[in-house]
Image (cartoon, rainbow, N blue to C red; front, top):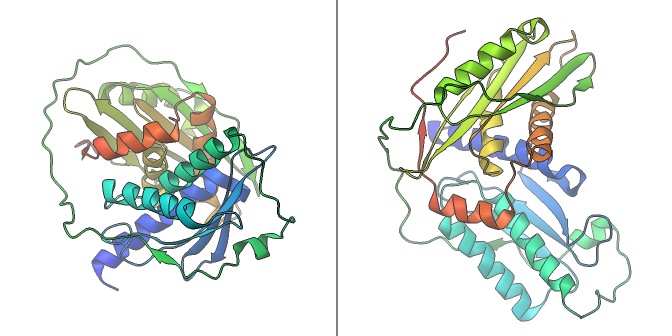
Length: 318
């Protein structure tokens, strides 16, 4: 496997784990090896009036140079309505080439369903179908259009001219998740400069229980208004690739000026990939609880405008 394929595969895995954490039972794995997934989307979780299944297959080149291959499945979706929705998804892809876009696609579809439910027309007059029947569709998977000019990755040099804030920000603690004697707990703090990141970590480590955790994985994203770019970084703390996955979740949710630390206390039983699911779920829960997640529309606009990201030069050595 080429080096580029390895990087693409890792980004795909991070996005898949983030989507599973965000959507839970709405996210369904059709074929793990072939990277085929289905997301059931509705206008209202408690009382759905309109529902659509988005089936996606992630090619090896996604998200770098190729879009997901997708299929829109709903008995009521026909003609111009289907064309309009497909155009909207392809427009999102063009605006975010090289980015992970599944979250934006799902929430765009949800927006369309919500708008549809607010209109006077009644819901679809169809018999209730099983999930398997719903997924079946005669249409072939549709390949989103690929523009001729690919966007080049730019390396931005952003000067440190942001006002340093000396105060220790407030720290919130999430509800722990326990699985097979391993416990995961997220901690969250608003941060606007790297110095505050260090202060939060130092404060957390004053707690003997947190200091004794097997891993304290963290990630942060700070938005620099003057440069319209993000300063962000992450730390695995011995849990290989966990920090990058956590940061990827935060990027998909488009959070800003916040850091999340997830402590894991190992209980003696290996959890395999489930450990990443618990880390993401802990992080997402506290971000939602503290209202750091934007509306999908804001996320789409922000991703389109603020792709510029620089990695913090700091790297902690453990």
